Image (tube, rainbow, N blue to C red):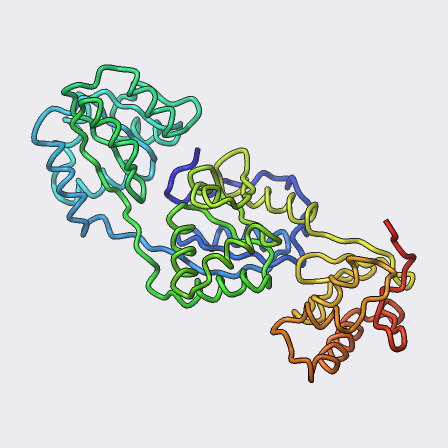
Length: 391
């Protein structure tokens, strides 16, 4: 299970597991704040066009009064158990404590506690702080840490739980119900990104299907996008887009939870790493979203928001792409102008529909290059010049 903090960037191996241009023609929204440039570069390296829309920002730890208060609570008496959920969270807590002049006292208190870490990165941070880890969840999940604690007698125990971006409400409530005194340590609290316009634009792009995927590296970023959509009256439309053709890619189960709870299918890598997420997208999008036909004697490949004609990648504007995708749904069949009018972005009025369709087809032919791929059938409509697929 991934942490709510954005996942660390995984160093790429010398040989890519996916083709260098696997994402050519696809447009992917990136909501990450931390390390967004490195993650974007991983996608762009595979040919993707990246739309950057940072969703959240961190409260500076040195200015976080809630973290200071939780630290002082830990120092008022012995701490029996410490739950370390993320390595970056523990390191941040230690750095903040040092800035307040409390690091020595905090390490001394935590050193006498039983430390439970959520995974190997959390365990590594524990050891780097000079502390001893007593148990690590094999599944790297908070749920397993939770079960491990509840299997014991917690009555009267003081347990510090290092949070990672938002409250673990059910986790801490059940510990309290079992008789423990719980200190919630709110390391790295999230707030909406100061400039919300890129995220609002990304919502619109997703709703209009003008992007192919949105990559999420933290659960707060997912919630921030849903909140931005709700503020625009588009939350359900955004969810429908994710349930449809826009791929929601999440770095791990915790990040995915706000979407899966709303019935949205997500793709996730086997390991909660940014490099693995980029590779998962590079495998999924070409397999799920590419249509290949032979039209007019030319190899045509529709991928995302571009078309490849005889190996030559050609970006397409929204209207010509909408027409091409509709024609490719039934290769060789005539598609009427009225059917094509429906798929055009913006829904042109009936009076301008025929002209809008003709303009979109003209632009499509110009973008495709070779003649004869799209044929006009007089008084009926248009078709891709290929053998009919009647199945």
